[in-house]
Length: 162
Image (cartoon, rainbow, N blue to C red; front, side):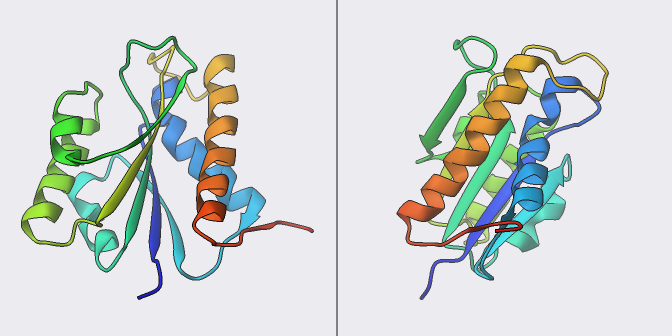
């Protein structure tokens, strides 16, 4: 079976840096053309409503703001071995939904076998549409990291307008 990849950006764009995952997916959609086996979804704060998107995927890339001991603006890229447990330890308004989503997907046997987290450490979670400069830079790093990861998997991504 050919790889089928879901790039899922989650977060709340109304809470400044909390929306980093969604902003990264928006950048990917705006700047690149993806082959049919790569699906990009702005998952926002949808939680269990995203279950159907996981079906038949071989890889799930989660792009999200995460709580970490790293300084704000840091990028944490991690292959997740036990995704529901990983997100149970995190604190963020939507991550309860993400933990439930992955737990239910696991129970229903539709959890993609390979899950990679592209995490961005937020600075500012106050109400606002603008991200902090450090997180803007991190979003750019994550956009390039997702494209690089797809390239390493042998999946060609074209730049818009090239």
